[in-house]
Structure formats: C-alpha cells, structure tokens
Length: 361
Image 1 (cartoon, rainbow, N blue to C red):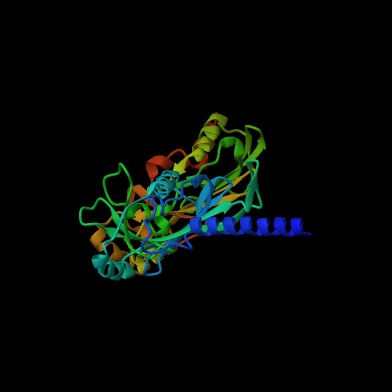
Image 2 (image 1 turned 135 degrees about the vertical axis):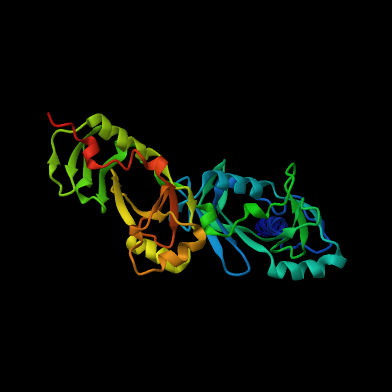
C-alpha cells in the first residue's frame, strides 16, 4: 500500500514539474524583470504556418491561407509566391534588439495605439509527438504581435508581443532597413498577377466572345490528349482550319498575366467602362471543370486629367479613341477589382476566328 502511495506521489510530482516547464516556455510565468530571448517574436518553423492575419488600426486587413501547399489571399485568390516567401523569411528571423527604456514606454505605447500593424500567426501543431511522428494536428494561434513605426535610424521597428506587453525594438539581422513594408494589410498587394496558368493538355474548352465583331467569335473543345475541335460562335463545326495556329494560340494560356491593379478611377468612370467598353470575353474551362472568365474592356486614350469628365457622359465611351497598348479586364466577374493588361501579351490569345481558317482555293 505504501509502495502504491509512493508511485502516485512520484507521478504527481513529475506531472507538476512538466506543467511548470510548459508554463515557463509559453511565457505564463514571465515577469517584466525577466530578460526575453532574442527570438521571442520569431516563428522558426514556417513550414507549418497555415494562416497569417494582418490588419491595421483602421480596420483594413488581409488573411493569407496556405492550402495544399499554395498560399491564397482571403482563401480565394492566389498570392504572390515571392512576397509570401519574403514574409515567411521575416517571420522566422525577426529578432529582439532590446526592450524600450522605461522612460520612453509611455510615448511608444501611445504611438503604437494609433500606428501599428497587428499580426496573428497560426500553425498546425500536433498535440504530441512520439518517436518523431505527429499526432492530432490542430491549427493554433502561436504568435500575436503589433509591428509599429520605424526607429529614428530607420534600421528597426518598435513592436509589442502579446503576452509580454512591453514595447521592444526588433530588426532582421543582416537587413538594412525597417520591416513594416513586409507586413502589408492591403489584399491587393498580395494578389498573384496570373490570369491564366493552364497548360494546353489541361484545357477542356475555350470560348471567345467578340462583341465588336460577333462573326469572329469561336469555341474550342478538347477531343484528345493534344487534339481540339474548332467551332464558330454558333457552335457550328469548322472542318478546315490551321491546327498549328490553333495549338499555338492555346499554348499562350499557360502564362497570361495582368500588369497592375487599377486604383485611380472614380466610381462613375469605372461604371461607365464596365457598361460601354466591353469588347471581348474569354472563358476557359480546365479538365477538372474549373472555369476562368476574363471580361476585356477598352481603355480610353484621352489625357488622364480629362478622363473622368469624358466617362461621365451619357454617350457610349466605346465611340471615343481607345488606347492601343493597354486595356482593362475583370477576372471571374469581380468588377470591384479592375485590372490593366497589355495587348502585347495577349496578341496571340486575341486572334479572331478568321485567323485560323485556311485560305479558300
């Protein structure tokens, strides 16, 4: 009986020791007099980061999600791989330089309350590991901090870590400059510029509607691994066409991008463009049934300072001279996101039906 009591007491003591160690590691027993570790802000293992939430103090925010190895903006739009890579590098290497002096903490806290970026980092972590294997993975918020303005020398930033609650100065070793630009809270700054990224073998169908010249509309449908049938806009088969030209056109859809996200136009100008200037719609469906639609709109030629006044006229804007180098586009019906593209990159994709027809003998 005494032996059983001894084992129970020993197990209880061991459990208590483990609990204390865990609490110290998570910072629960942290006091303001303790010296924090230099990597207190960092998340070293970025391969398990599943979600990053970034927001400013005015309510603008972005949610970056990792899904099947790819990063998405607000779970819908592919994110730019280079920017994600840079952000993860900052998250893993952000280093504590020093805590802010006690005499300056009040001023820094006031400044941070109106001019800081909130960062929440989530990881998929196991409940426990055994012999190197993970068990019961679950998404958990592992770090929350507020990244503030740059220091006077622009070589570091003020920051506050949730749970530590004292302002600090953080930096990236070997990097000259401040790090807030890496933490953009604007979704458009993360958007991938890809419009189409489908290999020719993955194309199931392509429909091109020409609104200025309807007779030049056409449809392409897959009939084999690298074989396609061509139809006119009324879905009547075209029997005699140049297959080399058709395959060349389809290969362009492996990599078609937009140039920039349009911000400068007023709402009235944007509405006028969407109402009057559409000249073509491209709809691509891949072999998995995923549809991508691009609506294309003429960009007017007049000087930008007069553009809004011209677009607000009742007359259709399409009658005005348009830019020969660039056009506007809307991806998948998201009219709030007006994109600017270059005709140069779309020349092969913009060919009319007559381009593929063989000359009549």
